[in-house]
Image 1 (cartoon, helix red, strand yellow):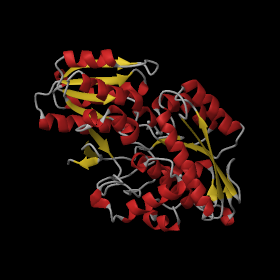
Image 2 (cartoon, rainbow, N blue to C red):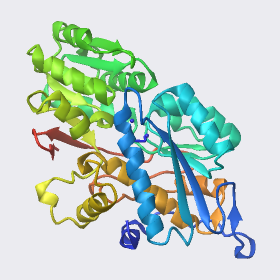
Image 3 (cartoon, one colour):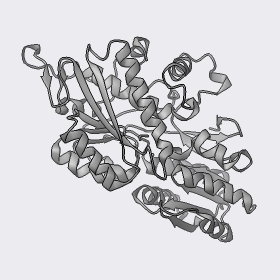
Length: 400
């Protein structure tokens, strides 16, 4: 991923009433932390504009386009948004370096929407020690949902445990005697997904269904040998817990060697333009993922008001990007917008954390009706469910 890891005033109507009221300040006097003032709110983020997962850079560009649009329509509560997004190259040391710059030199109010488990891990302790919100980060690793230890960190991605449970439940329903192989990144992101697979299988009493586990380094050029090992293990189900480049490679290699398992790819690497198309339609058709956003090219949603608004935004403000791939970014920035709207004149870091911890059974524009977002002060993991979808060669289609 987060991805990260930018609607007119009409959108506010979709987003109203989702948070508990923010506490008023004395005599309604504005309250500010660094990065906020009467005229400006400074937001920081990093993502991979370069390096092995540079596909994530599209999310950063789209986030900037969103806030450009917001500013063109008067900002938020009369304040313009200064959005500063720096390149972390999906490198933990680089992420920490850039985050320090955002906090100490650029004086941002908060860090949000950062993609990736390794990059967010690298900055989590620093931001919590500085008491700077690290919010709406696009990673589902369990370590980021721990308000007692890290009260300034809030994830905004389905947990990897939830994602893998969704896949395993479906797999065992369809293939009770499944033999499962997993390819995973040899980092916190990949290991957390693998742990999710193991936990879900154990809950079903099916631990032995996992017949092969193959890891790769993000610096590896290819994953050909890992795919060959998975095929040779006899696995008839393949779970790809990978970043985009390697997800595409894995699909293509499986097709080349004639391996045709029931195949799953994590939603962080379910991009049509960056993964499925490069892998080849013949290789990616039939792949399944657990999504949490409407497909903008779904013909059944052609008259959906949220889809229309989303596509209009992308056409006007981010025409160089593929709208099929950026619904998750759109969801994140809309949530950020709503948090800032609700904060009103109480733009303190403490109030931001109160708001992200009180999302009450809501959803964002471009999310299916079955998706429910809910947080409490003790549980910042917002996602409660996912929508299984299968790629039909052109688009994602709901399968449950």
